[in-house]
Length: 155
Image (tube, rainbow, N blue to C red; front, side, top):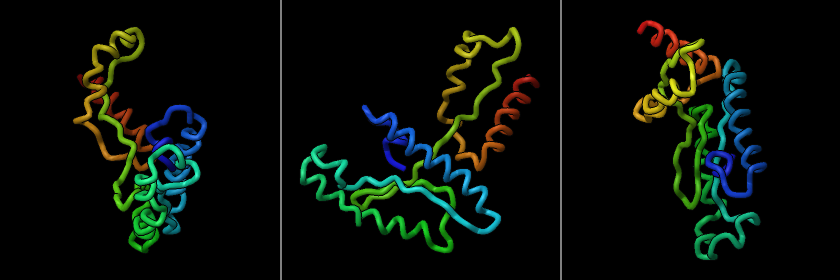
């Protein structure tokens, strides 16, 4: 993937969409490959390439050698490697990127559900303190939604 796929970049909507698609594919293949112990991960590298020439000063590009990403990638192919990880890597620095979601809140259904009702709960909807680790599947995401509905209906 790329930082453009994860975070956006001016003038690169098509590139960003394609790169974030890699993350969706990885998440699906992680589920499909698990039964055969097949692991899949993604790398979000920053490295000096033809695409980055002219965008940054030469002294910055000199720090972004592609080989400075390789040691992190090697850890994604070991027997005990994780599966479904996005490794950000560049200039010898490494981090894990992930898509997260807040806990969420049930707003209502039928006539009780309106833009105003959502706005009234906006602080709860966007409360990053309730951020959860990434879901393991779309099914798990759906379970989270229905748990919020059940909690909201209880009261």
